[in-house]
Image (cartoon, rainbow, N blue to C red; front, side, top):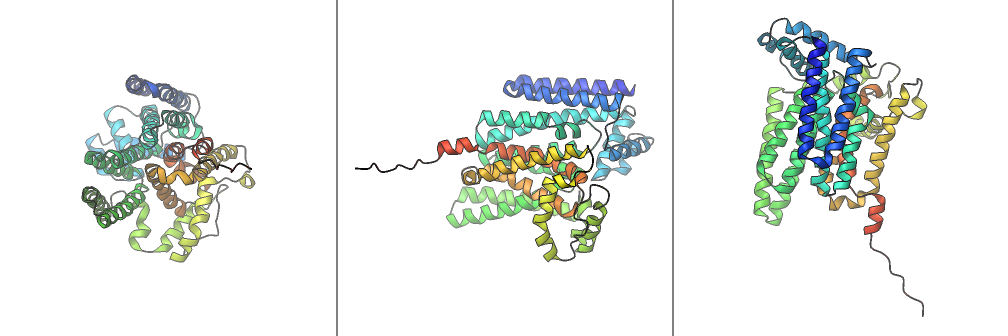
Length: 406
């Protein structure tokens, strides 16, 4: 019965993806390929052999089954945010149907594939370039790490899908000025925050950006733009105020709430253990430490493991992943001169940077970093692929006309 439930879940997911593909034929191929790749991997993991690195998956499954013994309504006493939110979701599904890990994996498979669709339309709304959007869609659909975290029973997809959806709506609001897009974007970010605190960095970053936009519009006397930005700023402040006052999704920010950096140092030390640890002697004991450590920690967070850190064959997977981040960041760096012409790409990359800095300050283990940075990878792919390539930059660069010799 458990396997049957999982197969039914995969079939429902296939029909949903097929419906998206029928409506948006241009992105049908990467959508279907991404779904099928994830579905096959989920079946292998559930029915053939369990993929490594899933300690959290076992805990989610065990506690979800334990909570489900109280019945569907009884599971609500465990409803909370963070990791508990995903455990509660699984427990509710187990209570309604039956304990089926593959059923929960089928949900991740579906929404993991739909992240492909979010990345595709995000690139389109930023660049109006169908070719770049298609390339981004294929990258998200087939990149091994994104496929892996979309086929196992982990909470990466419940964080990444509403995050990519929220960023799409915020960028669409910036372009089309529809207030319902702004509301949808903020709500999607709150859903992402329900599963992990990292989304709070996006709210803070968006609030700071909107504050600057509001002041700039006021100084230039742009009344309509000022009104739109002011409304958006009020909404962002309201969302941030709700989060801070209620503690919603703030389980990872207890050190911020208490003002004690020692808690952050404890978190850093907790992660700096085991074979994949890095920067084990680097602790933040003061605000100055946070400032000078930030770029170092960001570099390790994004690009570890480095070649000298490899000690087992499985580390080659992490190396491949980090090289992809190097490629995407290098593409952004080469196109930095074009960022002024792509303000919406800067918004996407700004969200990625805000979350990357937030995660980097607390993580000291490239195994954990691998999981966290893949939550944001679709945003980096969309932001990088929205920018023109080196060849396109050369083609549009003004040509120097040399004077003819007499």
